[in-house]
Amino acid sequence: MPPRAAPRPLARRDVLHRSRVTSYRKRRLEPWSQRLRRIERSLLGGSGKSQRVYRVTIAGRDVKQIVFAEAARAERTAALLDLLADTGLVPRRIARHGSELWVEFLDGRALEPGAPPPLDELAALFATFYTRGSRAPADTAALRAELTAQLAWLRDFGVLDAALARALEARALSAPATKLSRGLDYLDARPENFLRDRSGRLRIVDLESLGADEVQGTGAARAWLRWPGVSREALLAGVARCGGPDLMPVADFLELRFAASWTLRSLLLRKPKLVDPALFRRLAAS
Image 1 (cartoon, one colour):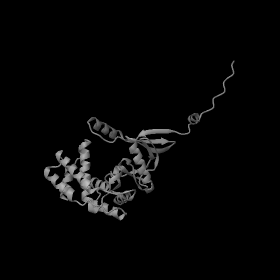
Image 2 (tube, helix red, strand yellow):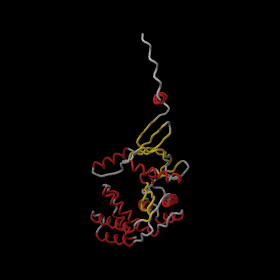
Image 3 (cartoon, one colour):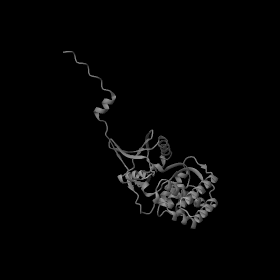
Image 4 (cartoon, one colour):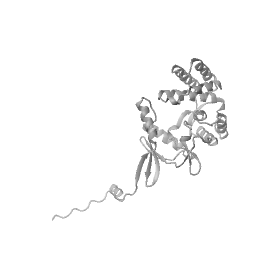
């Protein structure tokens, strides 16, 4: 018999494979009901979130994987996580490869939608965002032009009648809007986007709503207009008390700008349940 060939040395990948040094499990975090709503909206011609979110367990340790529609979005989000890493508000970044971002998996209790909002913590959160990173003065004239154009489209689409559109346009042109800045903001403050970790800290779980180069105060306006129980006066007083900017003088402009952009976006993305003409009547009467 011919002599047997010497065994091939084990390659590094063989050693890792044969010794089974780790385990890996991956599952979607979005519930089926949410995914089905997105599919239905897409079939009807609407649009929605394009990212996918997974809970990945590696060697018994959970991490969160976010797959964005484009690599640039993942890169921007990773940079914002690094900028906010020492605040304790966001999960720690682990790695980014192309359009995929891995972060710390936050474990804790979800906020109850009907519970009183954590006003003091929200104020501290917005104060942190509004004083962190680079800031630049906003172009007030451009913001007013953008807002009046959005109100005109809402009139043309039938959301606003002619008289209400004129009243709101007058407010858009006259409401104080000086000293607005562009910088960091958190744009979707609502109970389901936060949790309390095991130490009781309020943490952000929806990273898609981290914003850079935003008109600061937009996220706060969304909170007092869309989160039941959040008072405009109490929230903005808290932001200033925590070292953030005094946004009370520009609050009327901020809330009208948010309401117009939010409503127009909801129309264009085929989300009719989010269109609330009564909101504009309340703003005109306030």
